[in-house]
Image 1 (cartoon, rainbow, N blue to C red):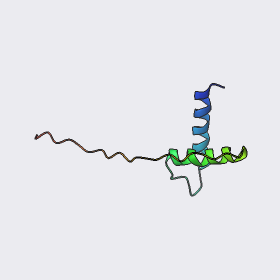
Image 2: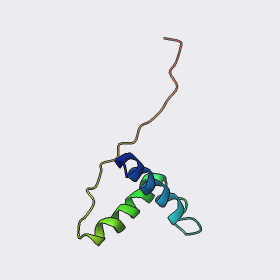
Image 3: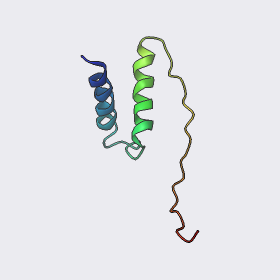
Image 4: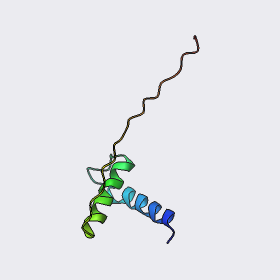
Length: 64
């Protein structure tokens, strides 16, 4: 299986796994983190935490 298809597979599992649960409202990145934690625990590894930087979008002012 090509690597990109494996990544898509993990994403699709993340969407389906939480349907109908209390975690259904999490964003996709958080769902993927839970799935990766489950997968890595099988081989005795842990996921590296990622620093998430929140991007603030604002409309520019045309009066300048």
